[in-house]
Image (tube, rainbow, N blue to C red; front, side):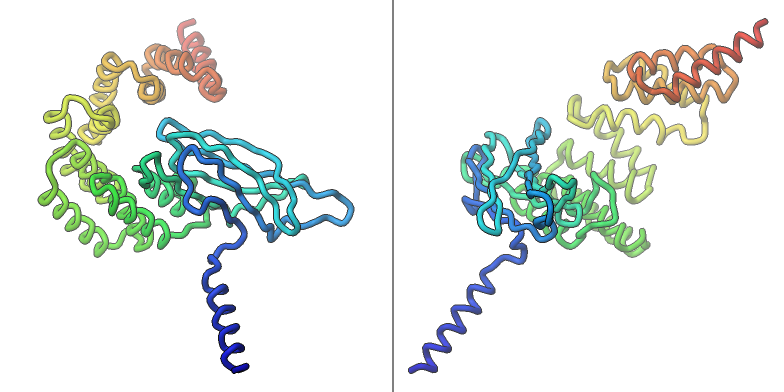
Amino acid sequence: MFRKKDLLLVVITLFLACAKSADQVVAWRPNQPEAGDKITIIFAPERLVQHSSTDLSIFMVYQLLQNNGTKTFRIPMNPNNNQWQATIKTEPGTFLLRLKFEDNLDRAEDNKGLGWSIVLKNEAGNIPRNAHLNLGLIQSRVNQPGSIVDYARAVEELRKELASYPDNFQAWYHIWEIQLKKSGNSSTSLTAIQAELDSILTTTPESADLHFLAFQTCWKLLNNYQSAIQHGDSLLAKFSSFSNKEEVSYALLFLKNPNDPGRLDAELINYANQTNNPAYLKKIYYRLGYSLRQRQETKQAINFIEKYLELEPNDIHARLDLANSTANMNAHSD
């Protein structure tokens, strides 16, 4: 009888041990939060410990990721025995909550630079689009290059995105991007990616997002510029409006004029007269200013550098270059 009780206690102990998550530093309530919920974060610090001569204060830094941007907050936590707690009021439309912790000694605990992330369900109780995609990008550090990455976890998250949203083709792009990073751009990986892309193109209904996947993959991953041009031209011909139209149009100028700087500059000037997107105008004016200066067309170069500085007035290097170019032109005109 006692042996059975002892055995039962062992089983319960093992069950509890197995039931504990692999990461006990951070926990939250409710277990499966939805956007708009109040979420209580429980933090058991591993590195942020009491200093012998200083009262410890811990702050939680958290980000609310939404489709229209990211909001960041820093709030104090309350001690509770060996843990610390804080409550966050999330907002409708939030799909990912990111966390890290700091103390009053300027130390941080951030899960090796990756932080902790919580996917929030939407008001209908579903995992929202782009939640697992963004979590995959965080794990692979695509948006924040660094030495700490978790490629296996990143691919896992990206495949979760595809399981819920098969038409979110950017997940495929980033899976292939990780595959090439891990293989060192091996020919085997390039061939496998091309085969997967061809399969998706032949089995999936045509859409702008699908063509953009093909364009982006051929251009940035496979270095197949001719195929990239074909997909880009097809995109512009078949779809009058899509979210990446500016990126495709701009990239095609370079893909089609790789060895003719004069013609490329002429195409860029023409494009600048057609777009009002300040991000692309800055790129164009900057490129034209320095390209024309290299060809000794100083007056035109100065004109484009001045246009660039109207959009980017805090670029000190460009201001110095403008001053030098103006001085050199005036010196030669004397």
